[in-house]
Length: 195
Image (tube, rainbow, N blue to C red; front, side):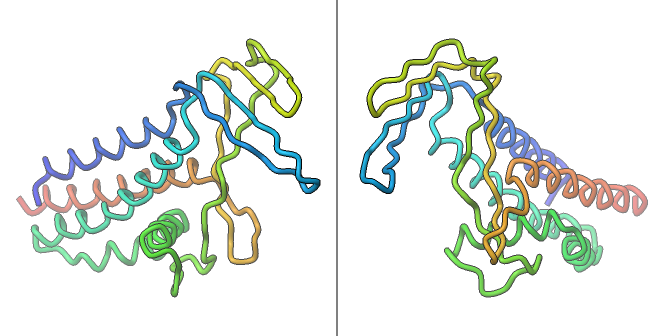
């Protein structure tokens, strides 16, 4: 594994992170059934589709976790002990959480949890501040909103085994990538010392 291949991998992570931050799109809509049986439709125009955004964050989580294996290969290529990478990951909350989430996404369940939280991902949540709404229309059983996408805030809650919200997937991914960059930099420093 070369330094250039690792650099390309981190460029991929950056592109995936950028994709999770993109808010503009063709819009999204969903139905909600109230306990009394009434079905209401919600439409948010000009934002990225909910499913696409979820796909983007799921892909990012999986690639964050895959990056560990690439870093281990890079470390091993240069004759260094890749077990130090596992130790670093096991001592980092955000990397442990991403590991658990990636394994949950891959297998549909977790038998073990590096973080001890057995986390899962909740449904995406939107916040559309009134200041970003350009137009809105309320009809019988339908709400139609046209916001400035730049003002829309998104969150994908991370839920622990007890059903408590413990974080946001967007934030945790960003922090996990920062930790992976620390590992990468440490590997490359050790490679330079050996030259």
